[in-house]
Picture (cartoon, rainbow, N blue to C red):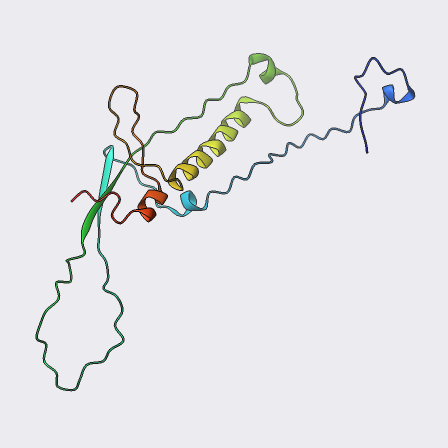
Length: 165
């Protein structure tokens, strides 16, 4: 097992003057893949509540039709239409480095640009986690409840989670 004691002033052995082998490469150990967010269409919201219409298809039929059979009833092909909606949610990650940190060299980049890039990566993970959650949508009420989008878990678990007909 390797160890370092370069800065250990209490050890007077021969290893006290050994150098550390510390690379300039910084490794982030947390995964950052965001497949849901990456595959979603991105558009500018024009309101805090976004709505869209959906339709459904009938279950597949494997039965045939007899030769010469007349149509005796008609199906309303648009009976399955519904209007769905979800809230727009704001996300934020703060970042900053001190003037001193900006001026000096460090192991692995630690400047304002890298802090911003890391915050953006964290934001993407926050959004992905929210989209994938069971969160219920919420409307900002002016007394501490922020506007929140409903997660996919709520949509999947409920029969008609966010229908706004």
